[in-house]
Amino acid sequence: MILDRDGVINHDSPDYILSAAAWIPIPGSLEAMAQLHQQGVPVTVASNQSAVGRGYISGDQFAAIRARMEQMVAQHGGKLTMQAYCFHRPDQGCGCRKPKPGLLQQILTELNCAPQHAIMIGDSPRDMEAALAIGVRPILVASGYHDFHQVKQQVHALDPTIPHYADLAAATNALLP
Image 1 (cartoon, helix red, strand yellow):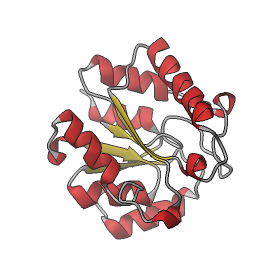
Image 2 (cartoon, rainbow, N blue to C red; image 1 turned 60 degrees about the horizontal axis):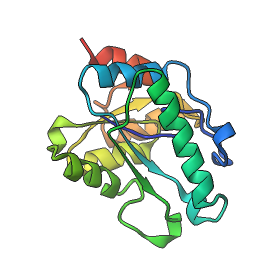
Image 3 (cartoon, one colour; image 1 turned 45 degrees about the vertical axis):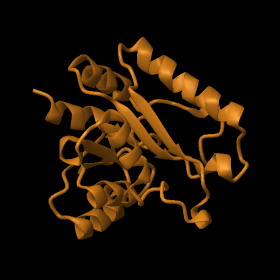
Image 4 (cartoon, helix red, strand yellow; image 1 turned 90 degrees about the vertical axis):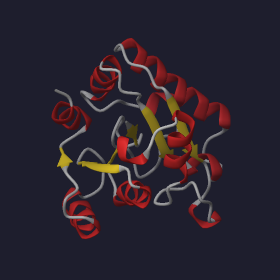
């Protein structure tokens, strides 16, 4: 399971998540991650984090945010198998920033997982584009800060068969027996 971070696991902000205190989990997300882990599903994160590349936060501040997330996931009985982040700014043209599939490919390679056996849960069209680009099954959630009606229309234009759920908890409940 590949999860976007902001808007899927935690509340997102158009002003970025700039401190550990600002990292606030979406209700039910930590429990869903624990449920996936306890069912033997590797839980990973693939997230654009240009706040680092833009100089809005330091590497130490980012590490504190990451540590808070890992600690809270563990407190709920979950575990993150892997995390992959793109710190580049959008204008840098890297291959890892979603909608490019570099982060997802990095996870698949590290875990020796075929794309058709992976699922990407995200809250934006760029998450869906990255998944579709390499054959990973995309699932959209409405828990991001974006106008979900508009996001849903954009995603429907990419592929009208992409399922959507209210949040990570609802998607997890639909996926697990």
